[in-house]
Every structure is written in C-alpha cells, then in structure tokens.
Amino acid sequence: MDKRKKRTRTHIIASLSVNNLEYHVIKKGYTLDVPAEDYGYDALIFTFNKKGEIDTGTIFVQIKAKEKLELQKNSFYSYPLKKKDLDLWYDEPYPVYLVLYNAQDEKAYWTEMKENLKARKIKPAKIKNDTLTVYIDPNNILLPETPKQWRDHKQSITKRILAGLYK
Image 1 (tube, helix red, strand yellow):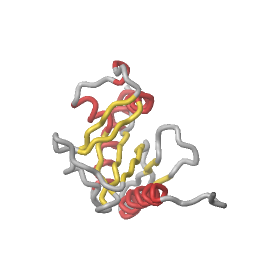
Image 2: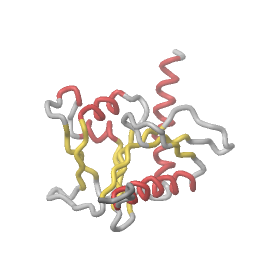
Image 3: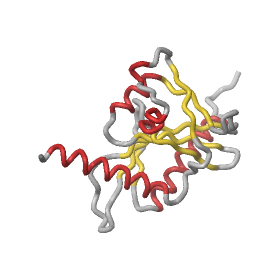
Image 4: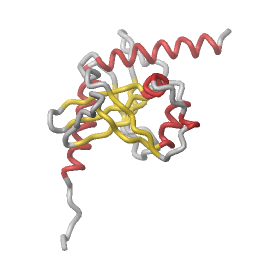
C-alpha cells in the first residue's frame, strides 16, 4: 500500500487544461479566476476595455480534459454533462463556455453552452436523464483570439441587459 497520496496523470491533465485556457486569457490582458469550490464553474474570466478598465459581467467556463479526444461518427467531439449543470448554465444570463482539452495534442475546443443547446432545440428542464451528451465542433479550437470573441459576445449581452434595466 502506498504511503502517500499520488498526483496522477488525470490531475496533471486537469492542471494543463486550466493552464492552456489561462495562457490565452492572460495574453489578451484579461484575468482568469479559479474558484476554490466548484459549483458548476471551473473558471471565471474578467475582461477589460482598451483603457484597462474592468468590464461589466463575467464569462463562466467549465473545463473538461481527456488524454485523447476521439471524433465521433458525426465528426464532433462529445462529452457527457450533468443535467444539474445544464440547468444552471441555461439560466445564466452571461455566457458559459465548455472547454474540452485534449492532452495528446495540447489543444482545447469550446462551445457556448446556451447556443449549443438552442441549436439542438434542447431545454434542460425537459431533459429526463441525469446526463446529456454535448457535441463540440472540432473547428472551435481555443486560439489566441478566442477570449476576445468571448468578450465581444459578453459585451453584447451586457448591452441588452443594461438597455432593459434602464428603459
């Protein structure tokens, strides 16, 4: 029997997945916070304008990692997610991104969860199982410009929210 706890390959891959995302986020001048407790979000991204002022709103991220991703027959990557998480993310006004990290090629792929579910005409409240398989387009590679795309999406949501508050 081992004397001490071990750091496994799964732990290493999880760290690499966060590091991969954080690298791209920091390169854009944003910050990535990893909550001490996990209640459906693995990371929060705070963005800033060109003057360095913090933006309103938050980008939420759920990160999953595997040693090797396999393309499914439909030419997408897939990952099973808990209905409880989907319920939370669907009700979140700000974007929630699922990032799926492939340790073998050190690349990450992403999807915005509300858009992903809407494209499939799925409402979490109507899901009867405890999990749902989500599909991610292999062309949605996490690239240096991706955090800026995410910021732009968040900013458009912020404008709609603020327009509704101050009518």
